Length: 104
Image: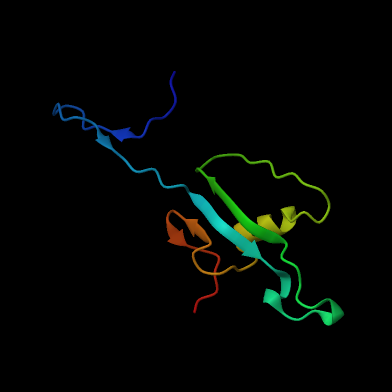
């Protein structure tokens, strides 16, 4: 049994299969997240970003393992992908549409 392909055919009319664009279910490009939205944090200045320029995409039904050391941003990434934390517009998309952002 083979894997899924990215073609659609109309059985019965003899027409050639049509290529279908595959849009990732969830996609992030250049994702950056900073706690406090860049607010001033005491003598240290601005808070350091927990996620810097993260790009990833996931197909429907896929399973993903996120690994990293303490403080690496694993929980922050999952909070963004789960919609608990908001990011700038167009950093994350669901089915090609902007998601997880604060409306302007």
